[in-house]
Image (cartoon, rainbow, N blue to C red; front, side, top):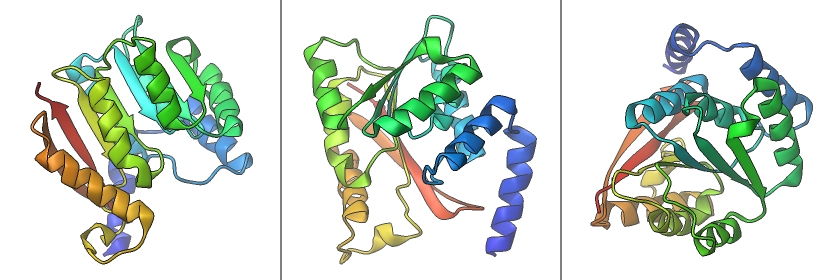
Length: 221
């Protein structure tokens, strides 16, 4: 079954989200620099692109830049006057991402801020940042409940909030887990499910990287 998953993933990715030189260069640079191989898969990158275009998003907030692969996908989908703020805790990752974004020709739309995400989110709110149209949560999973709280503070009705890696090879259903990442995902989903300001669903996925999925919410009020 996993062989079929990978074959279908490759087929759809090659057809609908083919790598171009800038994306390929970013992945190669990330690997050469020793970054963990946790970039979003091409089909999820294309999904983010499509959601931004469908929603007409102009302001995007990303938590977890890594080497900027997903950032390139989203920045390209923005209109010319769009802006993407990406939060990254590791300065090394941020430097690699900036080089990748420069090479992709989208750095003028991106502001990478280095430091713990909660501190950066607090600073955004204190500075009176305008609400974001789309928020992509792809940082440490144990902090997802806090990221949801801050996302709501930086949102407006219609804001889309996407959280990646919420199935975790099926571990999300283990009520007795002591894995902080899984517990963070579980709490995030529980909070999103009962939050009256949100309408939320989740989509399990299978592919070359195994069994995972993402959740997607829209702010109602």
